[in-house]
Image 1 (cartoon, helix red, strand yellow):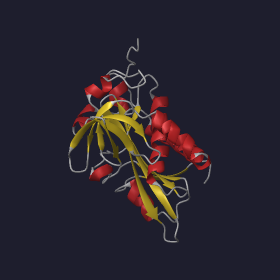
Image 2 (cartoon, one colour; image 1 turned 45 degrees about the vertical axis):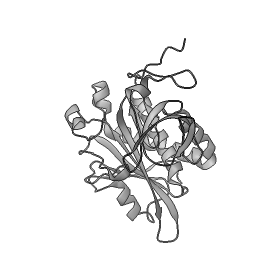
Image 3 (cartoon, one colour; image 1 turned 60 degrees about the horizontal axis):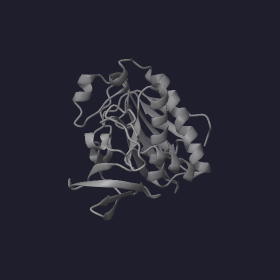
Length: 266
């Protein structure tokens, strides 16, 4: 893996993940496939990722030294979180298990990591990352779930190409840290996860909703939660960010309000 990002920029593609998977053998480890337009962008659970031309970051990282999509999610979500924090330092962004980044009650970024097998027996993961940059309010309102963008949050217009270079640097840096110490990136990812110590709603694949208190995230990525004195583990599902969970004081005595401001711990 090179320490300098190898970026392949595409004007338009159905999906950067699909492209990276079909060109897995020829792309070097750590290569970043970026598209200024995705016509069939994908999210988790078969959802569509909306990405108009030139307004968002839509990229896929080729990871040939990772075979567990969970750890690819850890690496890529931390890189996206770092980019958002550096770009808009006055705002609060947080990780939401299993693979989203939120500001308040609205999603601004998502990650989709997929295991792939190369033609020469090489295994790896394609880690797709989408970040809403310059979507305006009308475009966000057309999305079927609460969403936001940097532009909507700050009122500013951003240079998406500049942010692509910065995201590439963060992705490679976290990938290198992972290759040396997986436990280091997992510890940071776990620490930056919003849900630990909060009451949340979890929706499983069948659509059933369970209200739980999240106690921990296991090293394999499973959510460890408590309900009526019983412990549950969730390996997949959607955590719903509600006003209650935003207002709820964490087990460690901290928390944030619905604007991302710290709650008074006195």
